[in-house]
Image 1 (cartoon, rainbow, N blue to C red):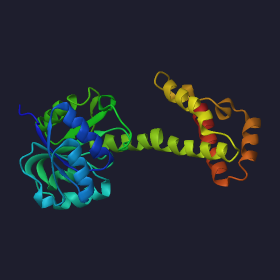
Image 2: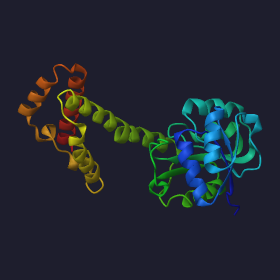
Image 3: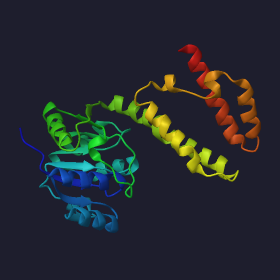
Image 4: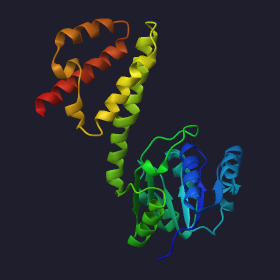
Length: 260
């Protein structure tokens, strides 16, 4: 079986940056970076010591794999222009189907790292789950071997499953972070430091590693402590949008408790 050795990375944002570094460390060769922004392309190309371009028509045809690591709206634009013939091309989106790439090449798939990425936050890629999908078994094997050079946490996930996984990730990651921002507002408005809540945040995250989330649920709603809940609602009078959110979530916790 042929092995993926040479890779073109299309994109130079948060995910593309972490992916480029991880691929370089794995021993694979990134032979080109593409970005619409010449500054972004230069920075990432310098980081992994490779060539770059800002024109899709100038992308080399010498790679074994082309990874499109861009935002979903940009992905749609790129696939309308990019033609790679029979070379393997993948995207990294959690919410876009694999088949969007069939207009680019006869060989295509998905290479989806399930994590949120920021350029200035170091990550250990070996700890990140990678979800892969491909249009043929041969292409799937190629992606599997590439994945194993980055992490042992890989999963075969189809496009419909990946959409649900992406939705679940919003509930598991994005929404809790917004809740942290609400908590930060509440304590700061009352002359307290958000650091007071960080041990609680860490303990909650650690607990669900070994206990089912609903079993780990604590607080006045799961205890049906209506007196405390009424007090909280009174305190939220000057935050009407947070009050509505408090009610919706508390009622859903009560409903899940009764149904489960």
